[in-house]
Length: 259
Image (tube, rainbow, N blue to C red; front, side):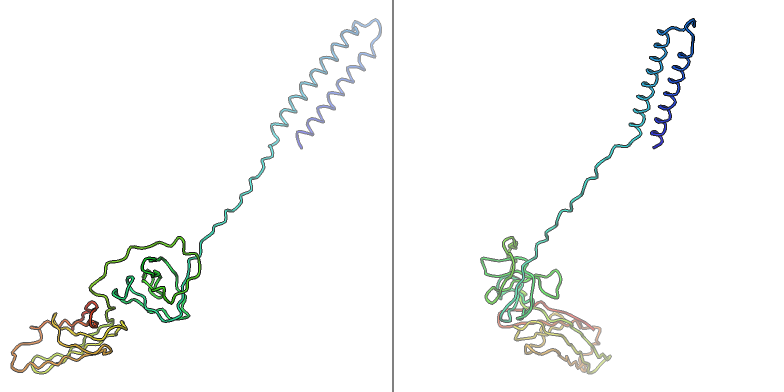
């Protein structure tokens, strides 16, 4: 806006100067020393000066005017996160640490429970699922009663794990309570929680030796000690106790506790 005003002012000034020059020349007498040639020269000089100045001001105005730069429109890229396939069962189905019942029991999936499928074992007809309630734990579920929803094309096929000698799920929450005395009778109470539905026995150990074999549903045991005649105190014995789930062909690891 300031440049435009300057251009207009200069243009008016130039016209006024030019007009004055003409008026002066018209007012001279024939006997004056000025000649038409000189008048024409003066007019040409003024015109040239006006043109040059207008050109310079125009270039300055153009340089001062910022060019309009188009603003690039950023189009967001849609992110398509695939939805993992899910699985449900029509009959309560046990899930194991490998593709057979010879592996350790992990969890039972009941009808109505929806679980996420994280892999497939096509050769053994098992699905690998995320064990609900146990983050980071997977297990093998037979596809016999399973119904899968979603795309399973890109599911990985994990390598079959090596079977462990401890294929049953071990007891949990093992607690050992000792009623000690310097001599005479004493007792040790052991309690636990069974976790494997396939166990038919519970084995109890003291100091690495089996001292009792109980039924599969038993959850406690009392070890009675009679020190009479032994002449030893409690501190001379290893009072580390262990509990193990078992059946006719499988066992769990031994979970230990001590006084």
